[in-house]
Figure (tube, rainbow, N blue to C red):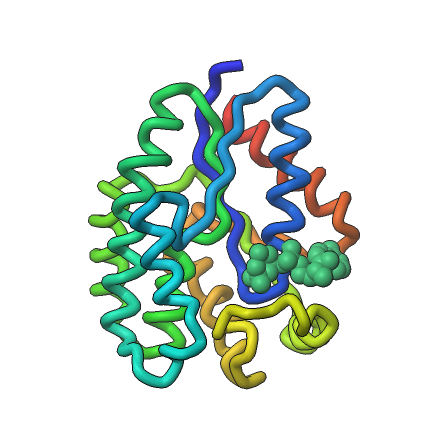
Length: 210
Ligand SMILES: Nc1ncnc2c1ncn2[C@@H]1O[C@H](COP(=O)(O)OP(=O)(O)OP(=O)(O)O)[C@@H](O)[C@H]1O
Ligand SMILES: [Mg+2]
């Protein structure tokens, strides 16, 4: 079925983005839609190399917030050009694991880069195209810390091993974006049962493409 749409799952560590993307991709594919799932940063040859630099725990103490802002957006520019724009032009649904909203939270809100500057860089990297809808999976920080502890053996990103206060600030930062981008972000209770969450998001995606 040729019907394009650009949707993103967002939220801090362990809120359930990857779990949901798999379920949503499967359900939409079964309904006959052509779906492309991709993650940020990465999703292209250049982007995957940038991703490795960004998520390397060895750089945790040296990388500057502005360096991060530019690297994320360098990856994002390639992703939009090589992945998102062609897929939408071909009538596919693009489902993204993170987006510019992560930059607004991690580099601007948490690390103090001017949010208007960050927003401008992000929008330029996206070539002016914004997602149709961003689903923000939200869970209390205590639940996030519990999930991270449970999955500790699988966690290698430097964000997963940050202090508790970092995760608290990330959650606050996400909630603060809802008013910065009116009508774009829908908050979803990430503590609801997995299938309930996916049904809700699938319903919203289908409505948005009508
Ligand atoms: N609705 C839910 N209720 C309870 N546990 C959940 C729910 N959704 C996901 N989980 C669990 O939370 C953990 C993190 O899930 P997942 O990897 O999907 O999160 P994520 O947002 O992709 O994390 P990351 O940012 O680290 O990639 C997993 O152990 C998963 O099974
Ligand atoms: Mg994930």
